[in-house]
Image: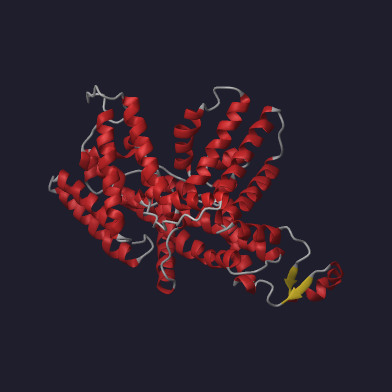
Length: 492
């Protein structure tokens, strides 16, 4: 079941909302939580009921480990550190088995010439997200930062459907105390207003913008033998926009849905394409993953507490792991290595006292991000190289035919003109206009978090109500003629 589907918007969400608050109104707190867990598991099982035993087993296992890490729980056989290590390794083993086993077998076959059969395992939905979230829970329990050990509450923490499938990755202490507050057990019309607004923004991002660019990027990455200079750049920029509007759209919808239930989950994006350097980018993009990588990988590796060389090594290794978390493939590892190298280079640049104008920093950062997304998106190394070659191949430039009279003199330099200069990727002149407008939304306008903050303070609230209605209408109308499409981060 997708957030951008009629069955979710008009059936599942309203029923879950009204039944949950009805049970709270009757002071059946346990029943309301149980119903929300049941609804969340139903939402998860909608994709494939075969995934259900996996997440249930994972929850029960981590609940038991967390209980044993509780300071009030006495266990003389094993130290808490041993229990924590066992819990983390077990979670990682589950993730490795389903997500990376075929990748390892393929590389062993290539390296040794062996012919081990691949397992062709189906990747359980959201396994990367609920695994990381539960690892964070175990570490927090080890640090005595969790306060209650009720399985129903724990199940709600893991399965709460707005953030279950693709985050944000939340801490137990961020979410569960909110369910315990009496004032959060009754409908809050201010939260409903803000929730509907940010959900509408996210839905518009997904179905009107992201899904438009998905067709162009899919053709460019998967269907073509060659790309000329312009079609290659439009392919890469289309994916850059698709990924941002798709994932930030999902996060907006998750935040908006959670607000309907009076739950505030962390923001995940803060205008990342406005970043002036690569460090600034990672302070704005997928914030909860960045936090996890910092708190549970970078700092345990040593962080910046030792030598500069060790700090650079820790930073680089953190992003190698971050790349591998996103997918089982060398293109993801290379993507992580590129970002790790860029962060090391940026840190070294700053340590030497160098600087550059803000506009130049932004230009370099955005184009670096755009190029690295090519490796993130490509299904194979060959596809990535093909797109990169097209982006930087100046001997294959095709211009629109209507410019022939004005620019015919450039033909001597090998440039050609064609009516179909962009049709190979199902784009046209209007695509360029749409792309410029979308980039304008990214670079110039306030993001959804800033708009929601203003709405919460009642600043020009009528403007946001009108905007919310227009965005929701456009999104719902688009859904009538466009097939529902899954979110990109469901693949990770």
